[in-house]
Length: 486
Image 1: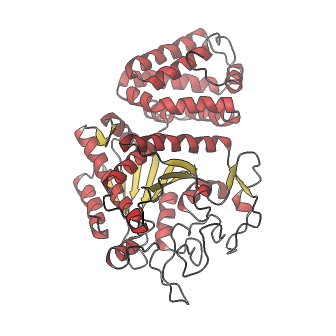
Image 2: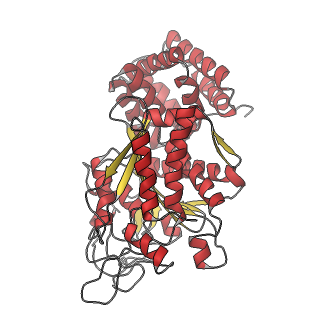
Image 3: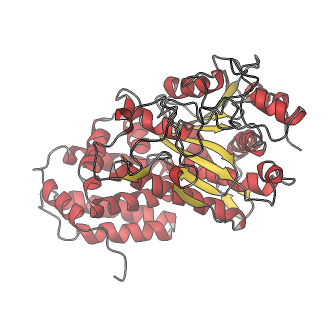
């Protein structure tokens, strides 16, 4: 029922051999503890460098057998949908072929389906409840390090389900990134542009995001993990400690998590819970927290939004929960959740502006407005949420029509030039052009979300002509978008 390590490797090998224009197999620099090679797969279509990237990680915990299978099947489904121009049907959720085309032509999707091959082999041949890798822990008769406690984010701080005891299921290892399997994940994050990340686990029907070691707060930026001691083999000394996250990042995590939950529920009605990792296990050294937190510890690192899926429900006993007798429905809903994350990693402005215009200055100016102006108030963040809701259906329409894409790109360029100077004025011509573009997109999309967004933008633009950009932005950060009928 479940694929062996060799069978998983064969899928990625065959994809790379059969479809080299879409699939590149990457041998990671370190073999597993027992010497097995570890491979990732890059999926992409079309041309263009410097793309945003998504990394999908599986098999960290050996007994969670269905998630590596799901990830290689997702790769097969993406390639088949793209090449055949067919919709990707997952239960009751249909992912249109146009959405798949946009994903593969605008992003680099990296799949590392089985990061812990030794553990998986042990589960399938010896002990079906094995969790860790197969490191022999020096000075003991105990085997294994928990690869989801081995990352360099408060490593060795024994919050919650974290242990420094070599025989424990949640043993952190002798040092951060002591394990080759963990270093391979770090290598992916260091080597490739990874903007979005998910570590797929089982079970509990959850979509988790940082932080795992403490509750999140958005008001005191002095409370950040790099200032805390690591390797203590003790819990945090202050039980009231709360870890800082910027309001805009917390909004991003919660918004995308809800999109993922909705995409999962569409498949067969199972409703996953979105919450910070602290709500489940309250631990340290996890892959998803490390993927996000590394840009805080080292300002030269890219910001990566890191999630964890806990796929499937409690089935009445642990073995059936970790590897169900019928994993197919769970795999399909998890696949839909992964597709939602991939889609949410697309930045519409960056995609259209860069691909059509071939330059970034205007896009950078708009990003500064988003991060330094809109994101500073709740009303401004409501405008960001509105844009994130409508960008999926909008991109689908815009990228399907070359002339419309050119019009939108020109509009982005004009908006970027205006955003670069707070004293510049919004003239009637600019406002009329925006309204015309909105009408074109709304007419072609036939989307309730786009109609609602269009109404809100039209509403705020009424009477905005001859305002300075600074005055207009002041209006946006003081009141959020108005809905039709309000």
